[in-house]
Amino acid sequence: MHDLVIIGSSAAGLSAGIYAARAGLDFVIIEKDKGGNTANAGLVENYLGTISKSGLELYQDFEAHAKQYNPKIVSGEVKRLSKEREVFIVETDKEKHESKTVIVASGANHRKLGIEGEKEFENKGISYCETCDGPIFKNKVVSVIGGGNSAIKAAFSLSKIASKVYIINIEDKFSAEKIYLDKIEKLSNIELIYKAKTEKFEGENFLNKLTYEDLNSGERRSLDVDGAFIYVGLVPNTIFIDNDLEIINENKEIIVDKFGKTKIEGLFAAGDVTDLPYRQISIASGAGAMAALVALEYIRKN
Amino acid sequence: MKKVIVYSTPTCPYCVVAKEFLKDNNIEFEAKDVAVDEAARKEMLEKTGQMGVPVVDIDGEIIIGFNEGRIRELLDIK
Image 1 (tube, rainbow over the protein chains, first blue to last red):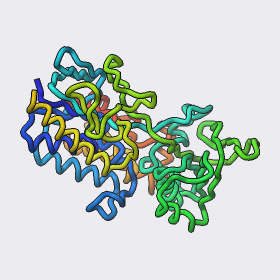
Image 2: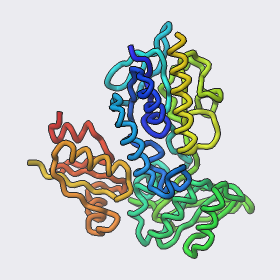
Image 3: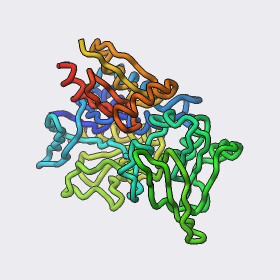
Image 4: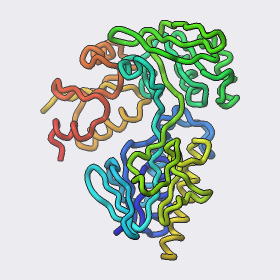
């Protein structure tokens, strides 16, 4: 039986892993999506000590740092997390781990709009990852749907690739940081559309049209677009957590206290998967360290 | 030896992961950057009917995304 199983291997999971390794715990890290949201973050300029670096490079630094301690990292998708008597059982698609404690750091995935044509045109014009697919839209007309940092960063990168970028925001203002908004304000090939609810994607083999409702007038308007990048928030990866544990809220987030403790003894969570606000790499790595330290204290006492 | 082509963009994390996986297993491959190489982009669209990267072509068998299991299977990597 392990002292600790860490589910997830991005900012929160690897940070927890470093603390666990330094404390001499017997632990394993389960990795599904290499790099998580850190690797997809585009250019990161608000992580302390890193003036400007791509999310992918930052993740590679995290990984190289963690690997200094030779942690056991196994690849697999967790299918079920449950607790039987005092033992946690973590079942993946490949194997089963038993542990005294668990830190869930499984992150969150992009939220879908859930509208007509979205599924049909995924990877046929619709993307959730500008760093992955953006370069394919050279000299094309694209749209970004959303109003937060991820949306504005994607639009900024796309403005250098595409001929025209529409940003479609359902709200009447953007929630992105001012530094990003200032950057896009000066760009002539970006057009901002406010109070617009995206309703439908259409095309033949590939996307070529998007329709939205103007929430001020109630009118439907269409745009000819080759691409649509959807950044409308994240859904935590908690599907594998046993319902009986009752630690998930209505937003599918794991409910934790300020230490990253859930109400189940020995079960902790950190990073984008939790109900704490602000999904930031710096916050996730801090939360991973905190969770590892409370897990360590719990192991020592029990 | 099987002919392996990887279609990718420079910034896509899974493209990097896929290429590193092949290198770690000593598999030779041709890397095509669809961000700059227009012919490669067209070729990828024709082969797959979609734009997501990475695409791995192993002797004509097309894998969309980084699917480690499928790559191992087709290249007989233990």
